[in-house]
Image (cartoon, rainbow over all chains, first blue to last red; front, side, top):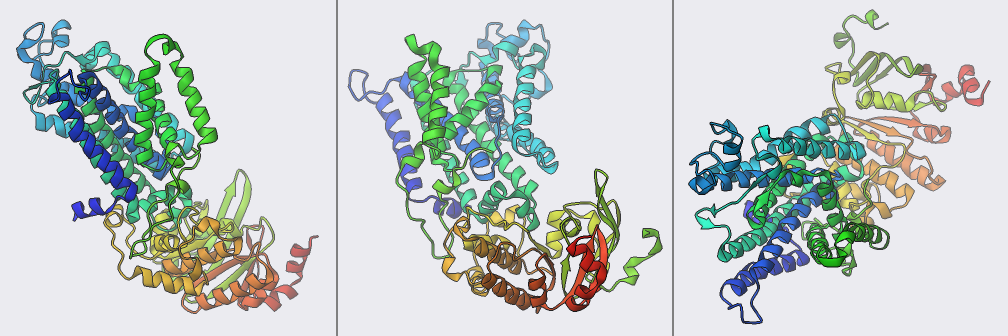
Length: 382
Length: 256
């Protein structure tokens, strides 16, 4: 039943988006692994890793759009959920290093040896098993979002106040993770990984597979998010976004809907972070930096808030530009460029890049349900 | 004052029973010792000049504002509304129409009614919700409020009067035991006002309705018992003719 729900959710554009992702997931790894480097069709491993990273950011942007674009929760702390998923993956990768580390200790990662720790902290137990790590990748961001959301939404913290406490959340986590005694490698974070499920994380083939997995994760994330926003619960979310107290007077428990969507979104962000870490080879506390989370908001705004696909597109566009601009002479000016993009898009493209696509007439199904209208959903931030 | 009624749960047979309700904001008494008794199936008009406490009274009944003192009992005194929040009160069967029309602008007229339609409000149920006969019920409601042709339009594109009717339609969809209607004809043309009066009378056949209104002419059209509020408590009660003959009421309305 759930599969059917997922498959009937995308509209025409959704299928095009999924088609492109599927094609990329197959073609890019093949062109990297099977086409010799001398061929003009060869895709270099650097490019694969780079675009794999973009896809992870796209999933992060999609998760933010789900809460911001459809429920009006402007989270300025989504980078925290991304980083937590990344740390969970990093802990697994650290435990896989085993005796190959500098201190060759079978249990303790190098940084713990360096700090003279004698035993593995309890919260590191189990991370040598991939299924446990995979569970934690989703569970840790999910539980944090649930607890945070439950208290914030039940106390009716909304608008700018909510945004500020999400910033505080990610900032507090950053300070914690920077500390050596927190047990996550402090300043340096987790790095020098070897294996992921027995495959070398540095091998081009593994990189190619990780790229494909990122594309699949993005596609799946899109299907889930789209199914949620197309459901009646999705209509309730949009109602909360537009007229919160009215929704409450209709008998909907607004805090339940918000907590649900916030938790789901955090889980998606966690998966994005987990796929990101093996592709870039490191996770450190700077991922929790408040500015990172704000950048995600810019990706979504540039792509088109409340469109899902637009958010993913925005993440890829902005990060592609970032890659270009942060190399060479232009490097010091990237933040100005980013700022300019944000200002220009806000003024000239209030519906984002995705809003440039021609408007479609709203499609109506036999049951009278309607396709979400991207155009009307994109409203200025609260 | 509240101590005077020892056990209201046994004394009231009314749908809504307010006794000694007092609300103050920063020293300003919005409601002072307000008592009100609405019988099952009754339609009641509540009038009063600006600041008489009409909207605050609705806020108290729907859980938006907690009274400082007094009792607010629902359904023969079986439920104490002061202990419930907005969503719980809506679930009990109290619907509210706001003074300013508040519909969901980015949803179609149809979806607005769908969201209001009586049904399970829980997240899980609404995630896996399937339409079953809802389209038909929505059609009936849209016919009642005369918006059938606008079914697929965005609610934000409706005129002011149409939005008011859509909100009334959303109340009908909720099928509450008690409807609170706040200034339904504010900003309406005479023709629209007439239609709205007919609409409300129609609804009152199957529901208990409280209408808060400024417009004396409109209240006359409804032809029901009237309660006049002044400075947070009841000034007079009776038919519109009795009330408008009352000297105190005239004084309050025409100024001292």
